[in-house]
Length: 425
Ligand SMILES: *[C@@H]1O[C@H](CO)[C@@H](O)[C@H](O)[C@H]1NC(C)=O
Ligand SMILES: *[C@@H]1O[C@H](CO)[C@@H](O)[C@H](O)[C@H]1NC(C)=O
Ligand SMILES: *[C@@H]1O[C@H](CO)[C@@H](O)[C@H](O)[C@H]1NC(C)=O
Ligand SMILES: *[C@@H]1O[C@H](CO)[C@@H](O)[C@H](O)[C@H]1NC(C)=O
Ligand SMILES: *[C@@H]1O[C@H](CO)[C@@H](O)[C@H](O)[C@H]1NC(C)=O
Ligand SMILES: *[C@@H]1O[C@H](CO)[C@@H](O)[C@H](O)[C@H]1NC(C)=O
Ligand SMILES: *[C@@H]1O[C@H](CO)[C@@H](O)[C@H](O)[C@H]1NC(C)=O
Ligand SMILES: *[C@@H]1O[C@H](CO)[C@@H](O)[C@H](O)[C@H]1NC(C)=O
Image (cartoon, rainbow, N blue to C red):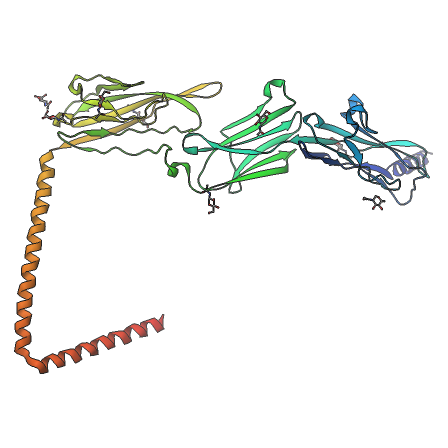
């Protein structure tokens, strides 16, 4: 008794599964273009339709909005892909896709077969995700970052990812901007800092599946293109009586993040044991804090910005008393969207001052050496010529010819050697 019950049940499920409605779980669409929502009836050969099935498509199934047969909102925008009555293709084409078309679509069929009377079978719903063009932008200081942006329909499971030479990059900024809630779409954006030359690719994924991609080729790194921040060491030897630039550059670690900074300099003269305040800069022209440097310092760093990365100063007229250790401190605040991070990088420069004279003396010396060597060389040349002339006239014609033959023999021998080596290679 129990066995027969099981048998009936098995039989029943088998019959039911002979009819299925198949539709893909996700379909991406480009706004303004047409999209096909596939749906197929699968009927096992043992069974047969006795009447043409009745098709329904519903948008966001709970809301009962009819897409097929088109309700008022879809009038003129929806058509069957294959209207033939014996077709098992129940796909529809949706024209001129709008943001509001993003959502779930259910394909439903009322079927009557030889083995079973009229019954309903549904697909497993298709999520339609609507997207726009992917836009790539370069920006930041020296174009040091790459941003990727796209508008997508709400509630769709779209994600962006950026790859460099095929490797996934960690975004420095990512956003899912709800556009204030007033728009029927959301803006996805992702920003990465450039890691060097090569191909950068931005990918749009829908439920983890690639929908579209856009790539960008970077030939040189941002730093090499100029304009970007490059940390250059300061010179450490100044000439007395001449101007000198004390270099101090501290690049932001996150080029794309806004920042504000001030720079202070301290000085410890040779023989001293402590630093004393020298200069402070936040806005032009800055403050000289050490009277020994009164009227002798100028700001030579970043201009017309609060985002200082070059904190160099200029000593207008170097004296020997300027010999010693200089240290510059950045007091930087990185302004992220919802928090601030401060950092205090510093640089140390040990300065030696050399007299201007040593330079002048050196150049005089080299000039003298030049004359000495020119005159010396010419004298030697004259002596050599006279010596040769005497030797030649003394040796006579015979000896000369012998010499020439000897020379030719040596030349051909070395040529043979070369050829031999070349063949051996
Ligand atoms: C429509 O379906 C029928 C039956 O399957 C098929 O013969 C016909 O080629 C299809 N037409 C198109 C345009 O696909
Ligand atoms: C239908 O979709 C749900 C979730 O979307 C999934 O869990 C389920 O396995 C699907 N069923 C079939 C038959 O594909
Ligand atoms: C997203 O839409 C807004 C508003 O229409 C537009 O300003 C913006 O450029 C769009 N972004 C992209 C990447 O198309
Ligand atoms: C980068 O190099 C490629 C090929 O070498 C070239 O086609 C492209 O125009 C270059 N791009 C830029 C921005 O210079
Ligand atoms: C630099 O200082 C020296 C001595 O203090 C002075 O003779 C010279 O004129 C100064 N030069 C400049 C450019 O100020
Ligand atoms: C130094 O700064 C003063 C005042 O800003 C300016 O007049 C002078 O030209 C500057 N000198 C140099 C060498 O930059
Ligand atoms: C250097 O320092 C010494 C001792 O402090 C002082 O006498 C001298 O005038 C200073 N020289 C200059 C050029 O400032
Ligand atoms: C300067 O910076 C280094 C790290 O770069 C740090 O270890 C050191 O303590 C700093 N010096 C001062 C005086 O702040």
